[in-house]
Length: 137
Image 1 (cartoon, one colour):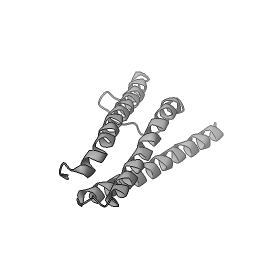
Image 2 (cartoon, rainbow, N blue to C red):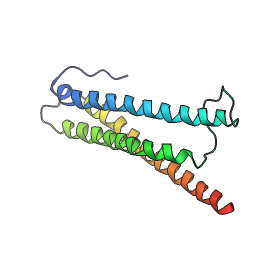
Image 3 (cartoon, rainbow, N blue to C red):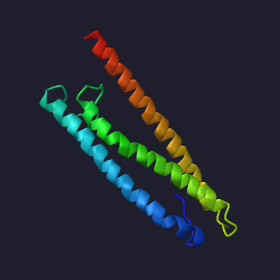
Image 4 (spheres, rainbow, N blue to C red):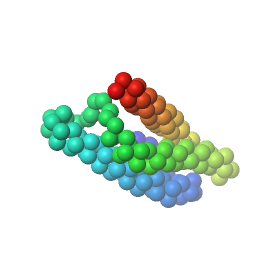
């Protein structure tokens, strides 16, 4: 947890961070809706139990929901990058005296890199496993 004193730099970044937080909550709701829909469908088909929390494996009908979700995820990832770049630019401001500005920018950059490349890898893996499975049939 990082505390950041209420100063000029904090006020410059505050509204952007609050907007990002609200968007992130919206995306988390979409992810919950997608995951619960997948589990409900699998439960209805008798392929999962009622206590399952996640789905292992990927079926073709899941692409529709995932392709709806992906633009929201990628927009959020790039917003993380934008937050990092904004904070790094604030550190170059002559009035910036707080070390917290840089220490908040670094996690946003790390989160962007991890989330973006993990999402790309998962989509690539699911796409290739789906193509491989369709060639077998």
